[in-house]
Length: 329
Ligand SMILES: C[S@@+](CC[C@H](N)C(=O)[O-])C[C@H]1O[C@@H](n2cnc3c(N)ncnc32)[C@H](O)[C@@H]1O
Image (cartoon, rainbow, N blue to C red; front, side, top):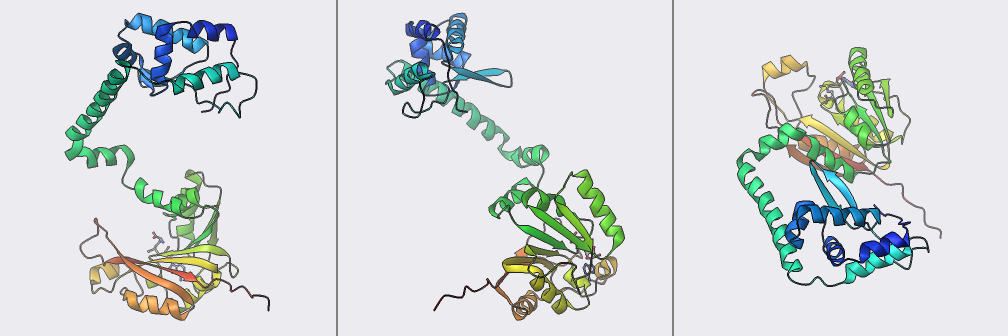
């Protein structure tokens, strides 16, 4: 936070006219500290330190923030003297001067010990919870957040289509990261659930369309990314479906397909009402190249909670050719 200091000069001079307060500022210029840490460093009673902190705060020379039941004090972030206007330059210049002062002994080594103690407390905590950290992490934040974080690597401005969106399980996540999202599915019952899901999640950048992979209800070159998760093994002609995926992708647009590897599990096949018993990934990659995708790349997905009879999954990514620029002769 950058603070504009508009402070009475009288208060500033009064605050600075005291050795303990000057030392407090010199220490706080190095690190944000609590009252009890300042007591340790300045070797003054807590009531004295608190009184000095009050004077400094009233003069606008320090700021505080609460963290749990602790209040932490620091110097305000300063404009550099060259960019600061006339207003407030007195306290700004004074704090810049304070920040440049060397910290004398024994303040420097006491500050060092306080910071070392903080680090030891933190190390001790993680040393103690090491074996239960994975549970603590998952109980606190769930198991997905770090995976979702990788989406931040992709441009926010993208328009993304989730083809065969089903109940729209991907839609809220996609909607949080991309400008617009289009969910497409041929089954009304699925779209109803997807619609409820996006309403509950408060997404206002998602469109839902009834449509089929044999003729997707989007114009050509419409989206930056096409996702087809667990859907190609339901369509009679995966090749025609891939032609459609290619058609709706913009030039240089991406496609991401999640598919099942080949399997012979009758129980799984019956349960899922699949059209295909999975696909060899090399075959799918080859089909994608045939319809015009380039940079086709496949990765196995590690599905730790996979059912015993469920096939392996993989993801294939590919790119539609960029539109070639016609160079002037
Ligand atoms: C196994 S679900 C996957 C749903 C979702 N993508 C997911 O990962 O949870 C397959 C979905 O594909 C849809 N689907 C089946 N045939 C399709 C087709 N020809 N074109 C588009 N979607 C289709 C189904 O209605 C169903 O919602």
